[in-house]
Image 1 (tube, rainbow, N blue to C red):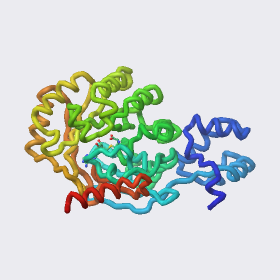
Image 2 (cartoon, rainbow, N blue to C red; image 1 turned 180 degrees about the vertical axis):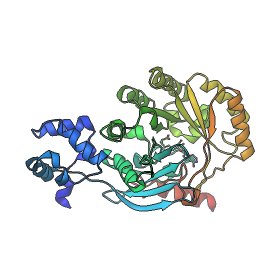
Image 3 (cartoon, rainbow, N blue to C red; image 1 turned 135 degrees about the horizontal axis):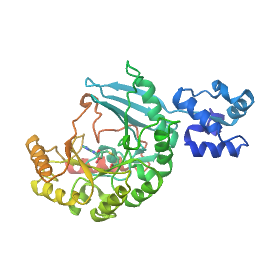
Image 4 (cartoon, rainbow, N blue to C red; image 1 turned 135 degrees about the vertical axis):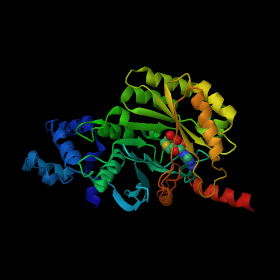
Length: 369
Ligand code: SAH
């Protein structure tokens, strides 16, 4: 095990990184293409079986490198077809990855960090604290394992048609590992998804949005949750640092490039907090300034939360107002309820270095007494 840990994990590189790696060991860069095809097109992770590499190269590679995937600890299947995996990593941490099948597409929701440092007040991932960033291999490994576990449709179609970085963590706070993973999702030598089918969701890290625009072509989703700075700051404390006006400017810049036509705004509807008709009207005004779609998410409660989900009437009214205002708005259906696979319910196993979860438990005990 010790020697294995020292070997370079080839799954931590995108194509450019792998080419540089081969050059650095005195080999031809095109070897990168061969390795990627084995791993992503033939699901072959045994270097010894990569027959077009030549025996000598395979032996050399095996002595310094390996292809190391995370491991599926548990798989749960919902009655509605949603699948949730608990995926474990070296060192005892784990995250959850979710597959959501719909009639015309299958979406895989991928995690970028173990836990999350942003501490949004309505999200159970935040309440668990933050352990660490995932590596590129741990991010792309979730997709690899899910694709293997799901297999293909009977007609040979892939089950995963879309990937959303909407699992645990803030992807833009793990930029350097997330971008090569996105690049492997996009690359034809990897999974080959079109730009509009790979979505990164952020809580609103403005410098990260600018950097993403300059780095790779993927779709952008932004967790907005309120058109008002004071309400948004209560829900997403990061708003104090990057308020709504700055965030909107970053979004406008993102779509000003002709390939990136709309931003998806996520809006979790919480009873009495951000679901007032006046909020809906303010939201219309705000989002008129950005080419966008709005995704309304009924709040999913979790143990210990002080929030409640908006009533169905309130959700319907909110949607009516924003649609009359000219926005394209859908209400996200809650999926995988029987296996706790909904937004904000992903937990994994977070060895919390900040011990925030302990502090929250204490705080809850105090308020209950
Ligand atoms: N950190 C990124 C990626 C996580 S995406 C981001 O914030 O965008 C997860 C989505 O689910 C976000 O839009 C988040 O705001 C939303 N969410 C979190 N907790 C939720 C809950 N309890 N109910 C409904 N949606 C929730």
